[in-house]
Image (cartoon, rainbow, N blue to C red):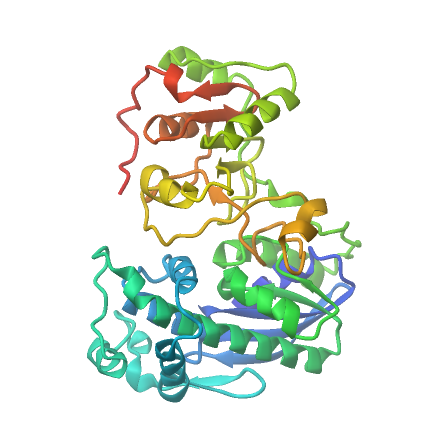
Length: 423
């Protein structure tokens, strides 16, 4: 069986969900020719109901603005989402930019379908993304050069396209409900990684329950999971057992674990110093106290998360009550732009005290929760060696790998020569 791109997205979302019947909405740049799909998941079946095709692409519209704002297409879109948080929603400039996008770049219909004015785009011709001179005339400003600084000047434009994206997603989700009559919704595709848009869908699309892609690699990486599930259920007729609540991914800790002896080997090779504890509670209590005193902690536990979001097993931790924590993390630890956001992780039972409304987000797909254990230009740490080298080369105060706790002040080792550069 050959599973089409958007069917794979839909299968990855629906089959691991706890729903017996659900609308499934898939939105990304492009896969084969489809860019948007609406499906009905029912029992062991996933049926395609509607689609939009290239070049009508919400993902590519978002990528086009990503490119104009100086970020890399297919990897910098999350930066645009973070930059949008610094835009002023009440600003006349933001409103004017939003109207320009809706009047000149994209015509959005009530059902969420849309048409792009292809005179402004070049991605359909290959090589580039947009007609830069035409965009510069439209918005009255030059395209930002990559890594040139000054990204904050484009915050209102980032917010304007974010607002348009959210509106399209809400309309598409409402249309999916009309087509299917389902009271549950599954989302997948690269645009489903936009947690702010997902939050609006959650609150405004009219579904009783929203399950936002339990398979947290909502982009193309998750397509392999969906293709396998589609083959099992649709081609081979495999039964679909009821997924356990809240989902069938069981926290998505599917990556490599820290093998027995890895930390001891690290200590021997680097001459590292650490404190070991007899149980998990003691390092957790120690770290909690250090966090409350303003320390920054690298946290490595168990198997690595599957997908682009840190879910607590490869994370950098800091106290969110510290007003300087964000700037410190961005400048001294992550070596990235100051506008990049972080948000707190918290226990579900504490959500009422801090969130409005208190919606759980296990996979950081309806709201951000923390930051991944890596620095700019490097992948998330996978092994004990990765974590220790990253720890040595940054301003982190402590590192926990399973049970052992390392303090920066106690280390004398130098990073290995094969460490990757920060940029």
